Image (spheres, each protein chain N blue to C red):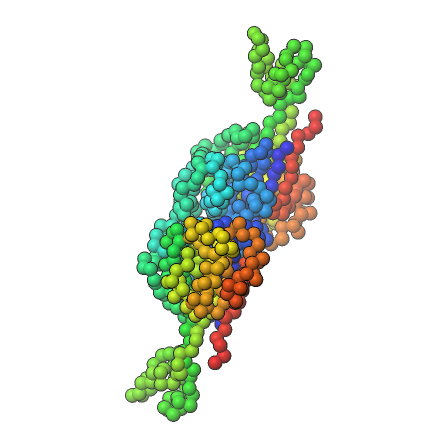
Length: 303
Length: 303
């Protein structure tokens, strides 16, 4: 239902065997990209994702490892004859930063619609997905994002027939829209059960752990969270650099009742994060230490 | 004597199996980098080249595939605790372009000394290497570069003894420096034979072929030259986009009496340049169609 691909797992700088952290979310023919460091466009190609399907690019913050791939990506979109507009959601100052980064190609053959976020919490609705942004606690203004596909209650055909609703109108009601038939108005609540659990992905890097992020991530099916350092003895460095330990990411996963945790944004000094798999699972059972291009498909529960 | 590594062979955009064209030249503990597209820093790491040894970065022009990797590279140098200054040689406007690209990290912990070129031909001397820059014929102001290690004549110890020159002074004379001993001045020409052939590398992308470039490349041991398109039926496209065909690069190699030609900056549409190896060698015998990280060591002839 929703395809998720963690394009890279690195932080700070791209490495030969580890691309920078960025996320692609595909739903209903549209791709969202979260962050765009140096090399992100190559990871998109490795995954076979089309430059034409990227409709919205969300930027967490303006540190180089999260944004300097943007001019190259936009130019590659242009070289692929893209003409459809691209939306970019980013912290305040985005227009200046993006204009500066694109100094070598200031004009693109498509519109770039930039939304600058000024509030601590912002919300958006793109292509059927509810997006929530929550300001994080980093050395630059930074946002964590959640992406939620809501699911309406189950349609009750028996009830619809009892109400003599024309079958042709059922689809609109299933979509949550009211319909008028003759002098009667039918509202979705007449024929739909209680809203069912949808799908939720939360993406959170770079930040210290905060209660606001726990709230943002509440009941995520998948929490993708930075774990810059594996071991607790790196706490001082994590605090100084405003990053997180594996144990702190696990704490957010647990408190937010997330179903699964993917750690990411590994420090270049963390040469083998996979040796900590058992440790990470001891902190939060459903933890994955992903590889670049780790992918999954999130499906609605069949209820 | 001089190590040469072609870090990538691609043009326009980085691809999963083909990094963007850039060159590393190592001599006497110092590294020159020519161009820095998205991903060049990763190629440097793949080759095991140190961020501390890059003393001079030469930029051919300001198209994204030749420069947008610069902020990431400079930041990675900073993260590696570099404090030694970096020199950048680039076309006019470089200070503005580089400042714009580095918007996300405007302050580095080392000096960046930018030299903007304004003339059609410019020359420099860095770390024992003579560098010549020649304006090319591209859609943006673009320079081709040659790097030449000159070699003095052979030292004649018999003649030095005849002149009663103290052995302690020989090394200076060998290096081409005059020495004073008592009331006598000895000049290098007294003890050195005719200058011998040195080593020369020419790097030429992106451009149409020109006579000036033939002159720049004269007698190169290695000519690294763009061959954006393999087949002659792409001539119109090459002219329109101000690039070169394999046959045009071979023409420059032949006219300049270069010893060896490496083609590079392949169009993304040229998915398998290696199938044209025989064809390329028929145009100029000593042609290599290199892979990313193709390397060689150029040595003085033992004469």
